[in-house]
Image 1 (cartoon, helix red, strand yellow):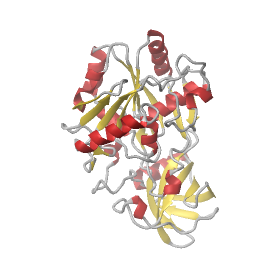
Image 2 (tube, rainbow, N blue to C red):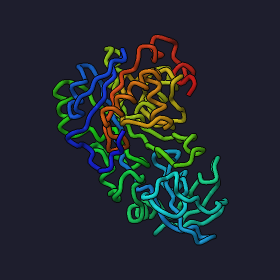
Image 3 (cartoon, helix red, strand yellow):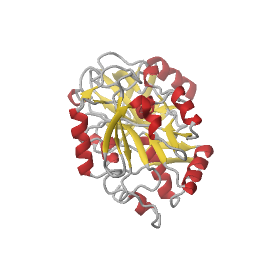
Length: 362
């Protein structure tokens, strides 16, 4: 695959690779995504806007320059306390795996991050993963993030991102640490076309986390726990679709994670409310809610790729990889897409639903 290196959300030549539930593969223009949908479908997307979660500054005890990437929090409303990954000197122009390590971090260390000041409250399972406590009131913290923060960015994009480059057309609450980029495919014309075809569209709000840290030990911990909120309107759409045997189509991995986490807690039902997704989905997971996913193209070994293994087996994923490479699909957040229908043997519907059934092996 080729790295997409321009921040264009809906390029005219964007492609989508399609895999039906029997494992048959075909290709089409991504602008025709709506033609993959049918009457009775419910399409669910993540409406989270992206925070300027990359903060540059100084480690006060040593005077060394650092970058702090906010990575997770316990609730969508939490402002002062975040899990964060710390890098040494440099910026996005250096590949994450080549970035120098930060100075040794210990609880109580002070960090100067532009207008913001913060304390390392404690270390979290890794020397570079910290619980960060920001000083100030919520308005002061928001102002500091807005003035000093930048979008989290990687080396495949050569020029700095603006925050609006990372917001989807439906972006709402600023809670994501990286963009829910599968939603870049959506625009208001496409939503109008769905409505005209009586295809229902709902949203959730899910705090999408970091996709990579460049550190194998840290990457093995991804995805971190992520808070999400399901509104009553979306919960009702899903209930109606289940009753009428309509498909539930997830736009992105965060939607799958949220809906399957909720179904596991409530025996296959998706009520409205706010929770913290803590599970991992992979090859041994059985999906209870989501029938198909529209996602970006992902590299083997990433948490996003692992989640796709819940939809299809490794033989089909291998064929997908071959097709993506042969046809020069573009990867990363501004790249092309895949649309996977869940294989018939990848469901727990019809069985007694439980946390173990929905998340077995996760």
